[in-house]
Image 1 (cartoon, rainbow, N blue to C red):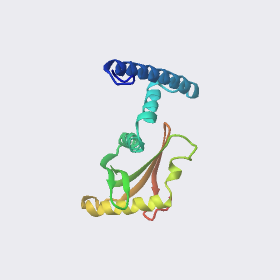
Image 2 (cartoon, rainbow, N blue to C red):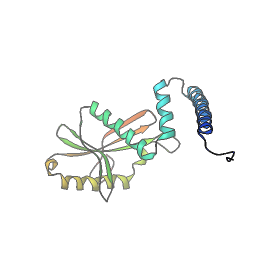
Image 3 (cartoon, rainbow, N blue to C red):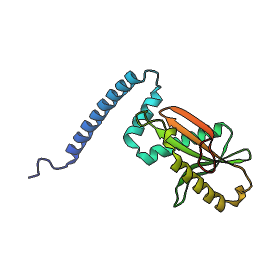
Length: 175
């Protein structure tokens, strides 16, 4: 005689159907709550927000926002030189070329304002780290040695993008 909780194809399919039904109910509740909070949001935004909240970890959300920032800068006429350049010292999210300048870009994301704005998170320590990593990048890539260097920041707060061109200098001081 089988155990009453044994996983047979019949019980498996029943459980799957129940979980699917519950997922649909939760999704409908989420959409209704989202519409109440954000009446002007598009259906695409609702689905994307739900997907990001439920299925993406921090690194995936960061990659998604870095791609958004890259598209934004490309629309401004910049070209991508590198993405996520990592050393022992740290990481630079985007390295772009803008006419003759080499631009190192830090991208920060905040889903809400409770933790402050995204740009506020780029403190003096982070700026100095970006400068150190950029110097390592220039040492490895001599083809950019003769170009002027610029440090830009992009803050993404929910759906709002804030872009600061020439945000700080080589010492990490805010300009």
